[in-house]
Image (tube, one colour):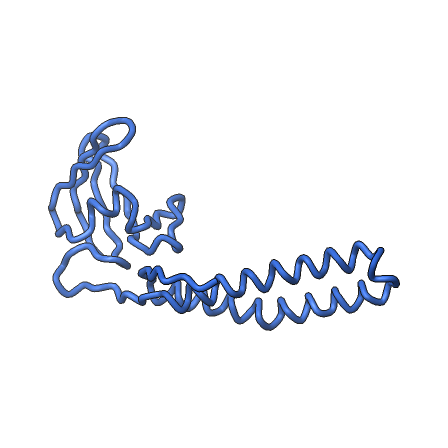
Length: 157
């Protein structure tokens, strides 16, 4: 199941990934073992739907653990960089939409951390790609389905 594709991740996202793995390997496996034990006690395993469902759920749990471990193994931790004053992964970038006069702050994160509703943009998204490497007062044009948008970088953090 191993993947050779590496990807960038912030230290915070790596910590969250490690917490999730630990929870699934510990509490998740313990709960699953108890569920199987309980279902096994209900009788004939050939006709025991609860037992088969529990075993199927166990297989899904183990697959999820393997996927998360693979993701952790292939993660490249990127520290937010404020050194050169440019937008990087982990940066908070406040932009002014010059047409609408509205300011928005985005945090540039890895693809697995993205949550656009919370302003967390994947560095693979069109807006984030346009912002990467930009400095204070830079103007960025990028295409959207509704046309070109022009954003001015007004704050970097």
